[in-house]
Amino acid sequence: MSSTQVKRLGNPYFTTKESGTGLGLMVVISLVKAMNGKIHFRSKPNEGTICEMHFELVTVR
Image 1 (cartoon, rainbow, N blue to C red):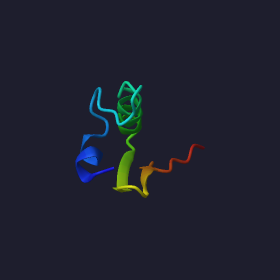
Image 2 (spheres, helix red, strand yellow; image 1 turned 30 degrees about the horizontal axis):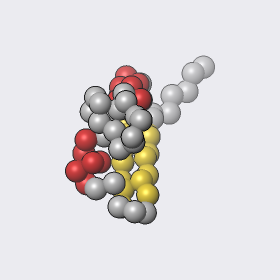
Image 3 (cartoon, helix red, strand yellow; image 1 turned 90 degrees about the vertical axis):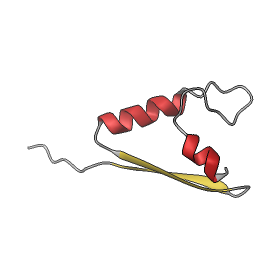
Image 4 (cartoon, rainbow, N blue to C red; image 1 turned 180 degrees about the horizontal axis):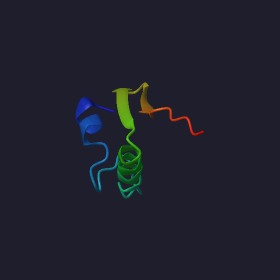
């Protein structure tokens, strides 16, 4: 994906697929943020995209 496309990830109705709705990733990003997580994307056109999700480790006793 181009850097412009990566910046638009998570916006409602943005998709790179012919039959996509652009809502799935928006929901995922909202859930990650609700759990105090962070999500990062990096991409190289024609090579692939990496998505990293980071969450705080919580120990329950």
